[in-house]
Image (cartoon, rainbow, N blue to C red; front, side, top):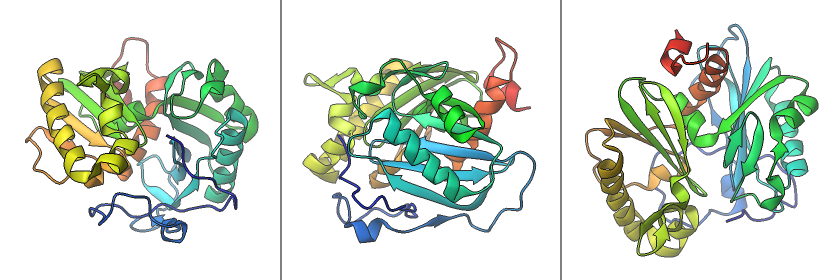
Length: 287
């Protein structure tokens, strides 16, 4: 599930998103070269965090202030076709230069990552195993860095911190994380059996969306929501990721689609969580 080649190395600012696209296939390269500006340029306030989202098809970054407000625009560069650690780190450095001033970095990564070290990255290749991405970025960017799974970062920006809250992300793959009263528990549901011998990622990843079309993809998603409700008994389910915009059915009252803007707050919360005493919840760290 890799992206197409990026022979030009051109920066692709992110499209606005929201409305369901007429076709599921990726638009031509020219149509992808759009920006995703903040609603209004934010005045700098306190420490500036460079929030990075590393995906299987695109790597995004934006500078945000302590309120989670975007400063300038959010930039996107296509993920290198051969997404080695060296190439991904170099791509993030390009985005950092585009974003301007920042004091620290937070990054969401599509795989299992602990204490800054990557254990697996199914959508980026095998060369990531045991790679210390946090240390590599700190050396390259000369700033302090915090890294977590991309679904975890999305969840940090949107959960209430009360009860059992499940977060899933629909993008190149299928990300997942569970929060219990604000404490996060990373999950790898994407590779868990879902139906007919296939995994959640097999049925709800971007490849499935392209292959099966929106109608069947939405039918599978509806079934997945019911399956996850029975498995976790969650109080709330949040759905993020770029492909969440293709949802075309009415969601249950305790299920909500969250935007990229809400996800930016996760970059701030990740730092606050990192500085919290051991055993304290995310919501306590945000106070």
